[in-house]
Length: 366
Image 1 (cartoon, helix red, strand yellow):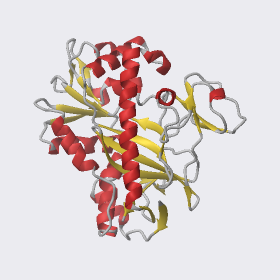
Image 2 (tube, one colour):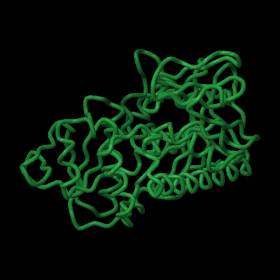
Image 3 (cartoon, helix red, strand yellow):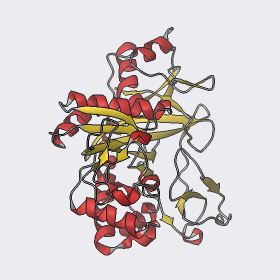
Image 4 (cartoon, helix red, strand yellow):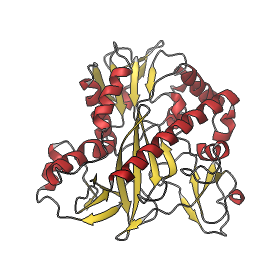
């Protein structure tokens, strides 16, 4: 794995806008960068693909253990949330996608930092934008990226017959773009689709409905489960016939409290890091993470002798520093579609913590 400085396409802004990527620049600074790219050897790609598949399998086993052993308190779930997760797991409600964030230098075993299993973004950049960049810039090279094809196929295997509604906070450009892209892959799979803002979802006393009073049978929602279960309409979720994508059992994996359970059940696994709810259980430098948080929110890096943070619902994970290339800390996001590894996207930052403003940089392998 290496970072190569390259020359951007002269009209790169127009090029990425032409494929529907409108938030390539944030607050005057480029979010999408093509003055560099990350280059891998093919055996390194094989290694991250295999590690991603193994980690996902362990995560599914962890969900099964949590549900069967009733370990919900370890994740800070309410009884109502636990029942939703349990029912969706036993009903075998299918999952569409997820993204594992890895600390990986292309040589050492990839280490799981967290699993964005419920509402992951940066999908459109990873699936579409960097693929078009590759075709324009390095057509003889390859890219670990079968995300689009696997999404369309996954929608086909998830069944059909009823309209799929897609809901998000559309005033957020990243959320809107991610949701519209997933809607398009669903449409390509042959399903009927309908977009709506999350606030347009109604309840008629029997079912969730859209603004045209049509029942919502299947709902893709780019809205976290930990927010959904606190909304005023949350008591209607269980009795409704709506099936949610992602399903409620995904809240067990998107919760960073899954990390100590994974370490408990798969100790010393080369793709895991020591993790605990107690600072004293994690030797050396550690990272304090809230159970629920996104894009680096609430994360603190602690020195070897630094005590824990005074905050409830905190996980402590051994520090696995992100590799640094040209002064940039690189995070690898590895995508799962259904149950299959499907590709990677790389985010980088001057800071050690990856945030929503951290840049996306394309990759290739030869």
